Length: 387
Image (tube, rainbow, N blue to C red; front, side, top):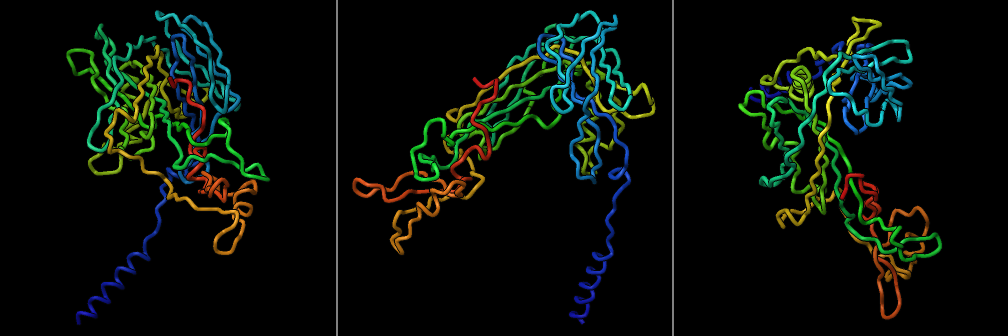
């Protein structure tokens, strides 16, 4: 009887699983493609970059859809225009505009399909400088944070983004290279031991002092980095951009953050409509995603050396690495491993160091490209903000 009940339970579970049907809500297959506008009109001497793209279906194979060959212009409330140039794949750029902070400005967009989009006229906001950009050790990670304040008590709302870079090295340092006919020492220009990794912020970073007596943002968290991350192997650098916001712009970013980062459980906020300040003049019923703010931009950079961190912290390499010996005359069968495996161009094995016996070289220690070539995960040139 117990066995029968057990078999009945198994059959019921199989039946329930087999009867499940995938649910694809209309939202993920909807044909609509709406304009997405990203960027800030930089009122100072730094460049202004406006990025245009179209939304893509969640169920589709395309993940990016830049808007090309559009006409993008910054306009003042006195009909003065500042054209932007398409620099690369939907990114429209202008050199420093140095705008009059007593006027209001907007963005005008005309796409190649004949549609016109306008943002609302917005005032220029002078962003206070960043007071400090620093980090603190928390258990098995570091927390990078930013602090700022406005002595005039006028700003209240802030947003940040950042670019980060880190210097790291391959697990093994290759001292030799093949030229197709022999193994020769590497030159400094051929070194593949030290590289730089790069990334940028991928979450919405905002802060408000509206509920405080003074306009002070203290140690607002930006990112957390695990002690085992390769980012902390040698040196880590971050350049932060700070933007002052109006209350309406801040609410836009709050709602966008709720809808994109804070959904998934019954305790999270419910999805809500995201209202930006950009509209389609040609078709007023067409949704447009984005909010154009106008401000100066504050910058600050921090560098974190491995010497500033606990000595016990070690990076976890993303690959399992080991050294193999490649001999001119292998001791088992006298096969020439160097000629067979290391000298041919395009070999998957890279010589690391020489194996000597007496005055001569009898072979090399070698490993895979993943363990010896840092350019697989990074580049040899540091970013512009690197010290």
